[in-house]
Image (cartoon, rainbow, N blue to C red; front, side):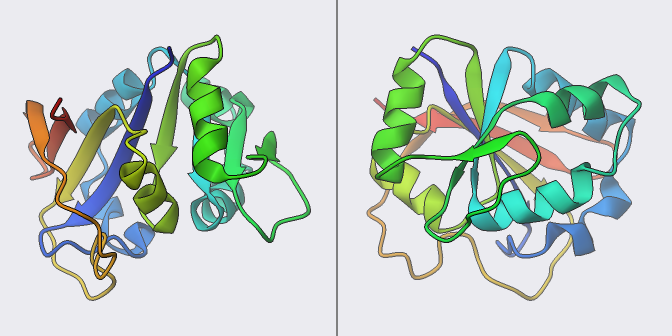
Length: 179
């Protein structure tokens, strides 16, 4: 069975909105190396609509380095009820998003990775479909939507698998749902 890995940028005060506005000052070689290691064994991306649209706009113009080329070539499966036009090697998750992700996880192939946090993340969490979380905590505070704020989600206990600290101040907590 394929593993689903969620990786999310978050500020010290829990904000997930617009990481392109507050995270770039911390991107460095350590950041890139961790991201590259996270992609080992990953064969496809699973994205919500908002993340897909932002990533497609940003990544389509990047090419020429091995990471960007592999990232762009990787299949993308998108949870959406509204998109009808597709670019960036993407296709919609058919039917119920949770059922579609469950089918993807049960299919043959490498692991799946999901970027961003929003309503799709809540669906995956509620349906116990995420196998591993990587929360990138950035040493910055910002105004915006807090992760899972007001979602009504039941407490979900996680087990700490490891912590990575970068010189820039980013701390990544790697966690999995407690069994």
